[in-house]
Image 1 (cartoon, rainbow, N blue to C red):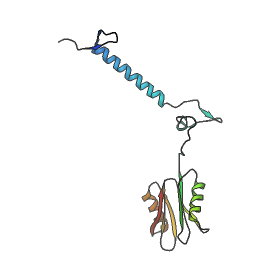
Image 2: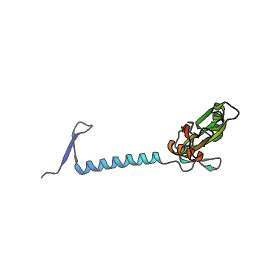
Image 3: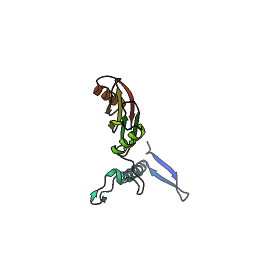
Image 4: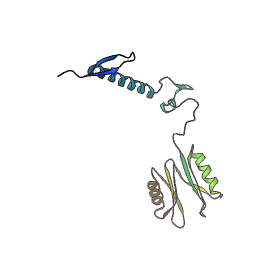
Amino acid sequence: MAPLRRWFRSATGGWDLITKVRHRTIFVAAGLAVALGLGLLLLPAGDAHVHGGPVPAAVQTHAAGMPLPPLISYGAIAYAPTGQSGKAWRQPSPARAAQLALRQCGVKECAVLSRFTYCGAVAHDGARYQGGAGMTRSAAEADAIHQLAGGWIVNWVCN
């Protein structure tokens, strides 16, 4: 049986013969070059420092001059005893989230009942309001109802 051979047209117009082994070698070398190139692109720079401290890898991979999204978002839900409410989510700080929730509530008697990074909820039993927080909406709702020892959910929000 004759060895497997491949023919292709060269740039000079003549026919060149490449054996199966040479073809595989070229293919593997090209694959390794691509893998190495991608690996170098994904590795963070090791010497970056800002004001004497190391820069996190997430910051190093962003292009210079592009704003970074906050790594953690904060939220808050505020309620007044009369039922007015306000909520804020996807805020850069807990203080900003509380400030916006209180402003949206619009009444002096408003108080922040739930501060959260994932989800928050407020339960009501007919007389009182109680906040809760959790990793999911259902966890936040369960927390609010548990802290109130009953009642129903009247408000929720997730980042």
